[in-house]
Image (cartoon, rainbow, N blue to C red; front, side):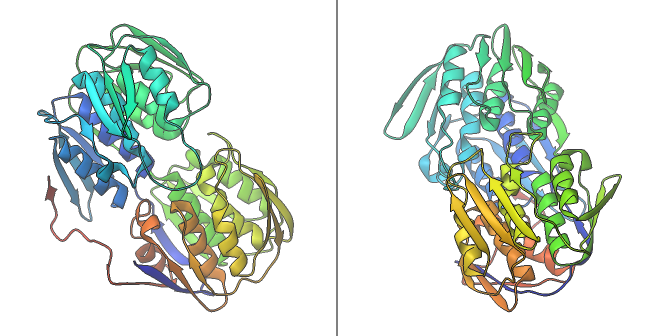
Length: 434
């Protein structure tokens, strides 16, 4: 397994470009299943979850071209001939977002067989909300041998009220409803920018969707969708991660290619703590000079503070004067990074869904273990400010969602290198076909 070796103490100085949002690209790739015509997606991040999805679509019979270059990151997906509407366990075991193919397959093919997914071990993310919604749309669903099997001659519009806000559930049912007969009204929907971005793509494909980005979405079903070209929105979590890294290292970093409007909750909380942040167009500048003040934080659904930034925020809290209470309201098992931070000298006490962080503490280098995607990012940030040389194991987690993070950080002055028998895969040719 690859490891990161990071020597702390260097301020980050310079410019970092944000990649496309993984959490927007994955449902967009699944949406290509809804049409026989090519779907072209630009600003695709070069991360492992994208490669996993490429393999998943290819196994179903899709033609997938995936190319990376200086000018663009692009994929062209054509699902003209779907030989097998099935997602096997071997392909979905590392990625929970694989459930996003369920709705499109039922809507387009009338049947689907999808393995229950894997992914980060950060608590229950039940698929029940997907299943209940699809059943209301007229699908017949059974579960056996670890697979969900679904069928429907044609889905029918319905009123769906989510018992709990779910991003992937909203996206999955939104895609299914585009080809359902009649109107579908979805309430208590996720309002994340990634949901609105998916709806934007679907409307370009000929769908009739209103209200995406709000709690109520209306979908008037159509008989077929066509191809489209779409640019994926910037990754707000990657941008937030680099903002905190710049602030903690006492650096001066310009983070470009982002959407500042998607960062309001993050920027607001960090500004409250004393981080100097300014934005101009698609760029956010962070200057990490001055003392930080402790502040409590609660994770919430968008537009609240994102759970995917909780681990990174906890590192920031270790360097703030006073005590901060971090409350995790989205997932019940998302404090595994805290124990690794304690190994580095942090003063953190876990009480159920709350973490009490007392600062300011000096962090020191240690050998630590990454437990999930965002925990990996938080340990990288902690290592950037720790005394000595930190070794982070299991960095394959971070490769799932951050594009060449070590290269981006090294370009602005971080001392970070990757070691291990399996070096990160790089696309040697400009195009990969499946």
